Image: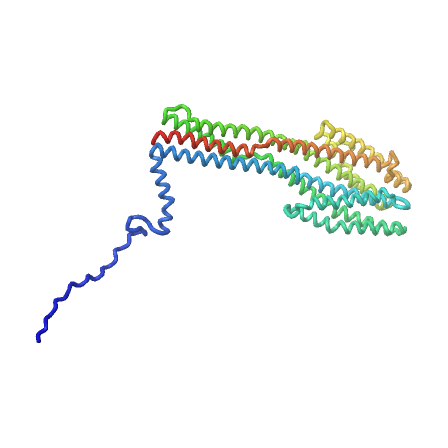
Length: 473
């Protein structure tokens, strides 16, 4: 049996090595793949823009996009700047100035409460009801004003410390005063010691904290006023740059197309010019009025408040000198210091003179003149009080110092001084509010107006360039 051999069939070629991948992550089509391809997109876009800008339609497109973006950015920045300024002025009127007034009221009420407690202590027999009511009213007003002044202590770090001192020390002070009153009614001499301890707490700790709180709130008020009158550099620079870019674009189009005007770009330019003129006039008027409110209002009020603080401190010194009964030389020395601060030496200089120079006319000037006369009457009455006390006529000195019905006494003269200063402060506050309100009105509709004009400018650029692009189709 024979076998037949079969010829072997063709063998499949062995698989060869894979072709090498293109370098730098490129695919076989010559591009980059995956994440590397994404990284190329910005560069490709820039190159595409450069290639496009080599042609006139491409250059026009780039000009249009740039002008529209600049118009929208400039309009947004200007609108936000004006709106922020408007919000700042509103905050000054509705929040910051009332807080400064409340902190001033804290000092005034506490200082008057101290002087009133000493006056009541000097009275013979039953404590006069009117003095007791005045003291209680002062403490209640101080508490209410402190609650208002402390409302933003969480936002203003420097105000937190004084507020804490006042909240902790005021109950201690009122407790000492009540202990002094109780001992005084029973005829115990230790009552005077308690009253002097209470007054020392007031003068050494409470009033300095109240003065710090007033200083913090006043500085914050001035800071916000300055912010409301600052120059909006970024918005103005962007608007001027936009105006210059529009002019350059129109010059370029005139040379390329031999057309004198492009209606769309003219409309855009007019919108920018209106924005600059309207904004400039409004901001100048607003800055002038708010600055006037600072100079003629809050600055004057600050001088008058400091004058009133000096007067209140001097009044407390006057009554405590009598409470000390021969041991009040330190109080009398403080009275002299505060009197000089208030009215200067021999009636020359001092805070009252500064107030007269700042308020030359109007109701405020009349109130300051009344305060100056009342201060002179008070100082003359004080000399009589000290003369009687030093000569051994203690009760006559007390009557002259605390009785309101003695027309030549110290108490009515001081009351006229305090009332006149308060009236002058009220006039200054009203002038501040009137000027600042008018400054706020100068910005009426400016923010939305600038936004609309920016949109008009962007639309004008779009329409103006689009008409030129159609000529190339």
